[in-house]
Length: 369
Image (cartoon, rainbow, N blue to C red; front, top):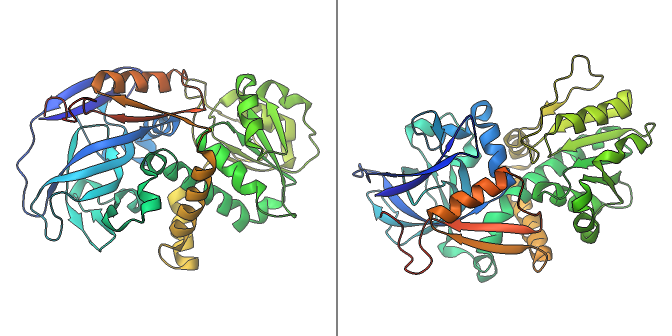
């Protein structure tokens, strides 16, 4: 049996555990057992944009339910695919589940793509899986960080590259909304290291997270959301928002007006807040689609080069955060669904990172499997 955690698409806090029959593999397919995966606010953002970007389509189930994608490790437990052997370990985009069937294609020694028919029109970056047998020991030792931080820090890097690629849109300062989020703190880190000639880095956060963001030492200034009205409105500003809070976005637009050179939405750590719906805005608040910048740089720099650079920076930042993040391990379907509800309710501190598995802690066997 395959165990799945399914989320109600219209009410994310409602989650259930479902067991489904393991299908017979067709020629060219593999079955992988999902060992463990990261759970972060980024996954709530996947649920929020599930229809717009297609995140619900990666691992489809009957509506009104959906499976939220996660980043994690899995082991091949059955194979009818050439060159993919039982026992292989892979890393990539997986469902919150115990197992999943995949159809490997375009396999190399280091990776393959899932060529399942329902994924053909989805962003290619999410269909690529890393084969880990050749990983260096230093990378193997960072499996938790690779799940928790590498995907988010890769987004941080492509955001940073987007700003650099556009000369920071002529801004004197970059405001990072929800600077305590993993993507936000990664962007602040990269901006702070850009060099002497760079915009000031302003981290926006809630009062309870000021200490955490300040300790990271990557912001020139940390500002709470209730202090936006005290900011200098004459500075040209680029705003990158991970919060998704409509009131915060409206306050930024009202404060800076025509001096707001960029306003882009990346995530929604404040997912329960109302979205920003401007009638007339001097600067549009547009959604940032990371795969588009990856695709642009694949043309500019050659295929895979931006991902290589992103992974290098993700490795560096993950090492810097060792000892700062409290990584908690959650095992079993009840613990996983409870952790999901904690993320939805914003009840998990930014200094806490969750690694989860539907396998029981004691035996290592998947429930219902």
